[in-house]
Image (cartoon, rainbow, N blue to C red; front, side, top):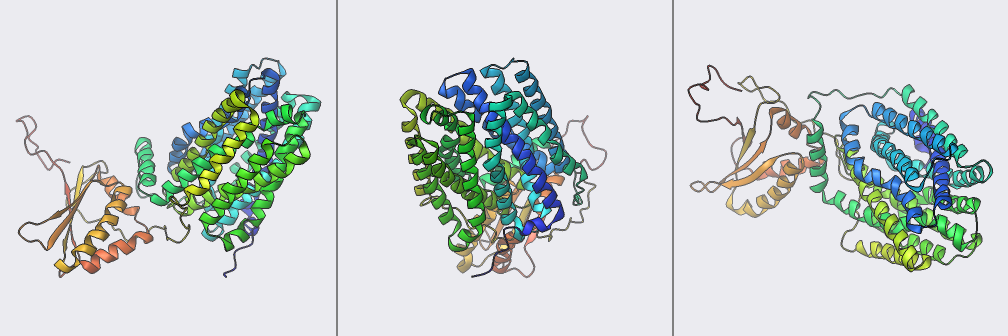
Length: 539
């Protein structure tokens, strides 16, 4: 069995180490703020659905804005995007502190502030997650993602308890102030970081076009779709533990803010353990095996917490849930990052987060409603059943093995020497590729062409068709359109080394004396009015 890198190997990289340390300070502040907001809501209202909405208000912005944030992460300097996001969260946190200090908070104003903090998180996360691949070598990405999870849950093991103590001793306003201060180290690290930006031969992809490109890439990637479906279901079921924990601490365990903080701390301790054993588990189980264990283990933790009447019974349940939380989410994250080329990784990570946090936002609302209507234990048991269903879903939607395909650019495309003075916006462009295929190779050719069609459409081709000549049936023509000359170049630059197998198979099946003939044509009007007759070649 091959040796895996040490779980701590990414920390040898000084830039990653600085980010890791400063991000833990930021995580600590966020967890203190989360405890304060959750406990503040229990003092403003006794309605379980409103208390659960505190969790939903931070998850919903990630569902709504992550795709846009992912497009920004792939199109702009990620460092600048993260600085803006951190600045937004700092300003909102200061406003929340002031409103709490002035005793101006109501349930809905509290939810508004936590929603705005979630907007900053939604803007920050795709750039931060996509930057992991810029900070460490590709073979250390799984360990780096696990370390981020370990660090977050290390803070979860102490942050909530400290937050509960701060709220109990000094009040929520001080906890919100602590969160505001904790943004500063991460912002300082961002200002110090000078990442290398690859040379861009083409102008930046328009924002709306970039959104469509990201959606299309994920929609045409079966491996990513299976991750999104499973992560949505995991988030939907698992969030019951976090969303209903304040109510469990207050009503079922008859505790206070410190009890709530200790339960969250138990969750964090379990997650730290899960992060450290993650590499060893991945050596023994496939990705799908790890995810099934995580679904089943979290279901057991939720069911155990549902019937815990005191802290000592609740802590083992939350610790088990925490370990399974980091096992599942780190594997989902790594699978998405290593199943996406760099040009679209920000948008792919954003859609993964949309699926996960969308499930969490929906789950927070549903489990709160069920707890209010049917009882707390009943809602938790239903959530455990949903998680068991997620494990069974692996029979039809198994998680793909990650990291086996080489998704680095193939660098085989060369801009053709065209005889017209094209501009980047010139178009539409029509491309036709001629193949000579022997009768005995037709079945294999059509199979390879089905994969070719998926790759073409995934990378931006429109109106893809395959044609066969009626008079010369050995001649086949692949045809597709792109909107502009820039889009044609961008489409070909997206080709990865993993796609080369399809190209090689087509060249092997082609029986012509030369390589397949490529025709690149620009569409033009065929009829002009007398006022529109061009004086020279129109572009």
